[in-house]
Image (cartoon, rainbow, N blue to C red):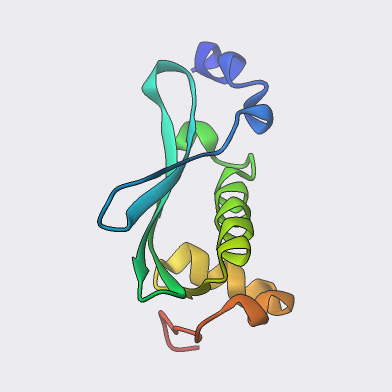
Length: 115
């Protein structure tokens, strides 16, 4: 375990990459050592919206802000492309709840649990 943590010392500096297929399904990812990948997947819907449907951050990335970095990269690209966001992924929805200043980036709010 110490060896894994030591290899991830600079995890915050690892780049966030984007992959997208011809059907409009894609993901943002951070690749770590030993094939460790954190990812946020999405799908385009219509010409001006995208749905965030899943976020997975392995234990080796926990506590590093990697999930938030994935979301911020997605939001920057969505804004540049003129797209609004529909966060059905619980992590993304929770982040939008924590950041009311992001409300203008939402197509509409999705509630994932009663509160």
